[in-house]
Image 1 (cartoon, helix red, strand yellow):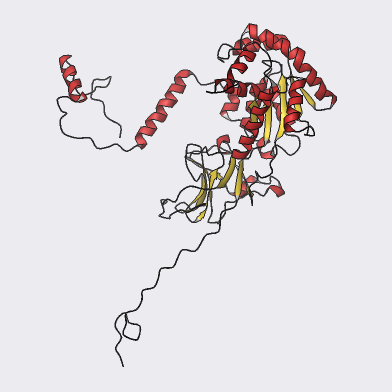
Image 2: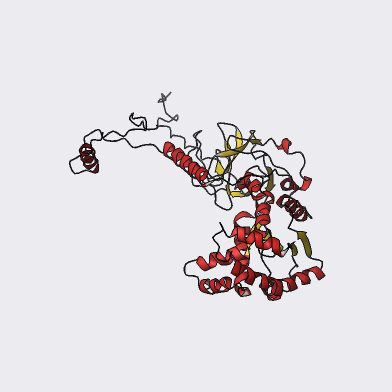
Length: 440
């Protein structure tokens, strides 16, 4: 009998090494998630299959397209997160996790499930505690509602538009900002879009827009409608949000005719929220706002021109919507909290605003808008900026410094000469006189 070599195959020849098994191909990630009603509105939004490049995680797992730590993962559709994937699984913590825009973790759900626990939209809101989502270190209560889609929900998406009209100072901007913060509606201000366009470098319409706004006149409708349409399309493509509050449009019958020319003569007539407010109240508000807004049209002369234009050109379009039963009139001379409750009630009609969002607690920013919390002072803002800068410096690893003395022509040597001439120590001092210790 022929002896077998240690690695023989029975005929005396060496045994061929086994080829390594190729990793099992992972199914393509085709799922999408909507995050709604979180205590941090910035976390809300549409999450799409991750396109982050392969990288090794803390647990040592190398990611692949659409995956992280061996499970599917998702990026924010709007690309605003500093951390990608922004919605992923942690093997170390055995949990699904959602992060804030700055990358810090905000919400988590401890489970070994292959997919994030989600609320099924067809079953309604239900008990949100059943999902198992919790507030993490950098999060704010309540935990969000999670909705899963088997395909991209943006396909075939059409805008749901509500017009918001009222005199200058009627509170359109404030209420629209609240609706964006609290109800996840998108606030599009026709005026803000026009102001941004006139400042945009190379804009052919910039000078024309500048002249019209300074004179308190309405900008040609072709420009305004084009800007609004582009903004809506960009928002739906990036975030999947399709509820739009269009602030300050249409301001005339020609504006409405221009809207129909762009969106189609048979387009659904949007509902209009019409903010009614006495002239005396409007004047007081606009002059107060002019002290800090920085807007060139927040002055008494422009205000009077704008109000004349408003009465002559905007009220007729309001009448058209009234006749069609599409105008909802709100008394915005009331206190801001009362007005907000009226606006929230109207936006909550139908199925456009999720019931979870209607119950969302007021954010700090919303409390400021409603006058329930003071805006931070400039000094406080500066302190916040300095704290963030200090945190960033701590996170950056310092490069080792040379222990060799500085050369004769180096900046350090020159500073030492100047300090010596002034009788100062080359070592920096604190206010108490002791050397300043460097933070580690």
